[in-house]
Image (cartoon, rainbow, N blue to C red; front, side, top):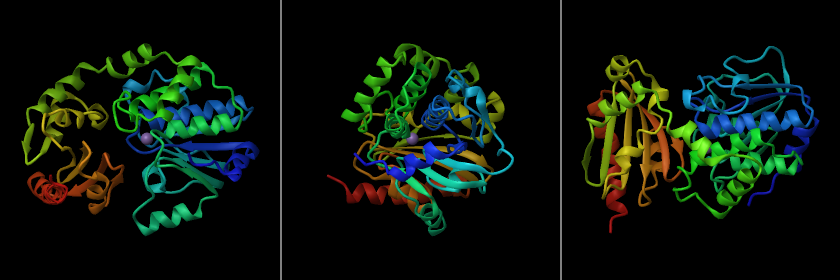
Length: 328
Ligand SMILES: [Mn+2]
């Protein structure tokens, strides 16, 4: 387990005003971890805390305690400390810069690939980046414990959600002893698993399931790869947006015999956002990185410009190569 630097704790203890930001297209780990830290700092007596997200809070995360405090624009003036959570570059926050005396990163992604991002990372005041942590929420939990913040029900609900989302409901390989132990403490502190499950997973708007139906009709598979696509036309037809297809990549990955699942989401006429999932043989972080993206070995993403046909051809070529190299 990575040690938390005393500098990081000192910054959080000594700062009076905070800006807390997660990543674009936020999910449960990003939002839950940001809110948990905000609530924890509030319990420490901090009064000036802005939680910001470039993109809206997804509908199924609005149940999270304190989700109403999230703003989409930067606060005026300079804060003492900016905290980036569940991401490690400015680019991932969706903002160009923060006015902050100090910047802190709490994240569990691998460090940035591009040199500009690496420079930003080198420039921050303190960081806790532990790719071994199942969720950023686990790191926020560790930080709050180190700060002696009591974990109340609101914090526990946010952190349990963060953990639940990033471990796929404690099914993925990151469902480690630490994840489960943290979950144990969070449930003891008041997080209610069934209530959170209902709010999170059994609460999809009708239009979202319609979009899933259209998207699933594109399901194909070849050479151990299965994929589905959501087009702009499908979004328009169902009145949905990117936030409605958060877990779509899970469907091609459910297919028997599939090693890698890919979800193609059309962002612009000639721009596709890819989500990649691996069942273990292929490191999809490397694949995503080859296209300028990033993530984890089992879950990664990138954006590729071109027609759908062209984008698929390019990514499948790289994937097939990786599958051959790791072939039995
Ligand atoms: Mn995460």
